[in-house]
Image 1 (cartoon, rainbow, N blue to C red):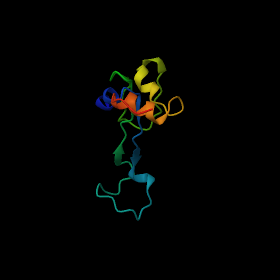
Image 2 (cartoon, rainbow, N blue to C red; image 1 turned 45 degrees about the vertical axis):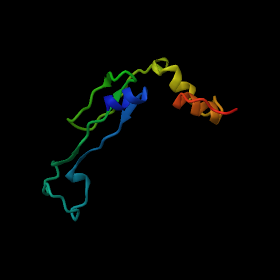
Image 3 (cartoon, rainbow, N blue to C red; image 1 turned 90 degrees about the horizontal axis):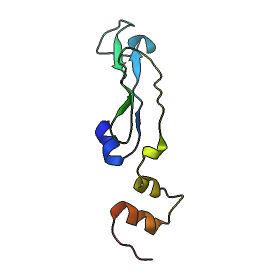
Image 4 (cartoon, rainbow, N blue to C red; image 1 turned 90 degrees about the vertical axis):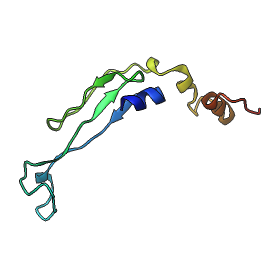
Length: 103
């Protein structure tokens, strides 16, 4: 996830499930067995800032809610300038590609 944050210069929030066998009905075929305490998906959600710093590390111990204080000023100006609500399509293409556009 760090590389995605760095490439996009954006905050990355991943939402990964933590779920045990007991959350499914008894007729659900699970390769891991039928023990209701068997972990089928171990979670691993995290929050990463635009510079690749992990603000909330993944948890693999159980269900949890991750939070982090984020500073939107950490998003580079170029990324914020590409917001459609603030630019025309031609200007948006120019800001993303760096190529000149026709007016």
